[in-house]
Image 1 (cartoon, rainbow, N blue to C red):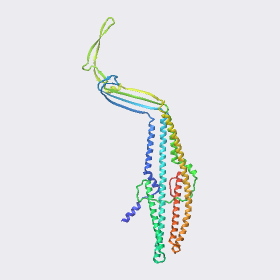
Image 2: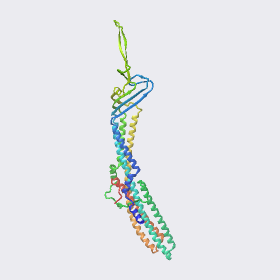
Image 3: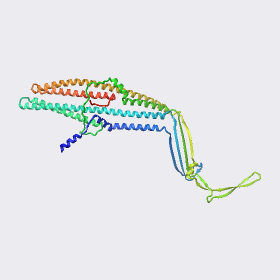
Image 4: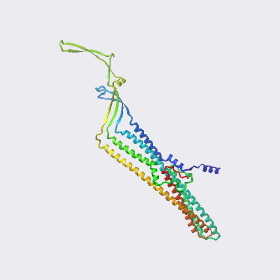
Length: 469
């Protein structure tokens, strides 16, 4: 039952391909998530810059209690009693012209959104290449570990053989000590290779933000051949293609366009601004009263008026003291209603030279953006040229190392045969084996260096990242 559980656990262990690692990094890498938020922020800014061109409508209302003497705004008289008042207004305003600042701001935010998407692509590309590099590093250390274990196994077999010869008295004790020392050194090499493999596995897991586990294992694919590609291009051709396709170039070019819009916005702010607006307002005041005709308590009397024009006569004018009441709320809203529409023109004349300073700063920022574009182009060209040179050197080194390994293998076989019959010492045998191990390590290093550099070149040609044959 225990054997069944162990077998089941081993069979369900996930083996990670390069594509699995890259996709997991895309889903979990914190830098990518942060850049996604930047894209969403730019989307919100683009939406806002579009909506701000629509008319603005605002409503306002107040409720105020006044104690003490005040001039009531609706009766235009002094009021000494407590007065409650309400003010309501609805206003709308629309900018008709402001030097195309709003339109240029919208276009700039649209450019910034595209640039942030390209920044996300650049980040994903960089992570993809880094993941591919660490993935190949794991495969390299796996093969190095196989070589170390094979050499350790050979040494152990020789140690057993010499032990028997020493026990039989047909070999010197010194040969056994030498081979035992070599066996210890080979075992240390195996441990060192295991540690390097463990570290490379750990590094890849940390890179893709995967919880570290000792069960992590990668697939050993059939790697692409170490040979000159059939459709080989020159560095200049690869660079020309990259200029048209790489997101870092497109993003930098968009930032130049964004800087141009910033300059247009700065120039627009020193031009006159024309806007159109209207308001509707009304209010209520407890100081506004009205007569109540026919109410109980009304008093009537006559005021005498004497005319001095002959013949002198006295006339009596009737007067009535009406009872008073506060004009109702809804009646006041109607009688206090006020409406207005109009245009507003604002002309900047002098504002501490801020507008001109903003234009100068925008010109400098545009020049910086243009310089950043040239720097990115320069760095891209250097990267392609370096990768091309490294790939060419790695291919030459691989071919030379292959020949060296072939020669060292033949030499080691001959040395081992002579050592087995006692014609060579353990010291000579160990040196031959060290030379073979070194040659095998060199050919592996050249192999994986070539695969990684050609992967970079393929990537700049727009091909998906792949190390498979």
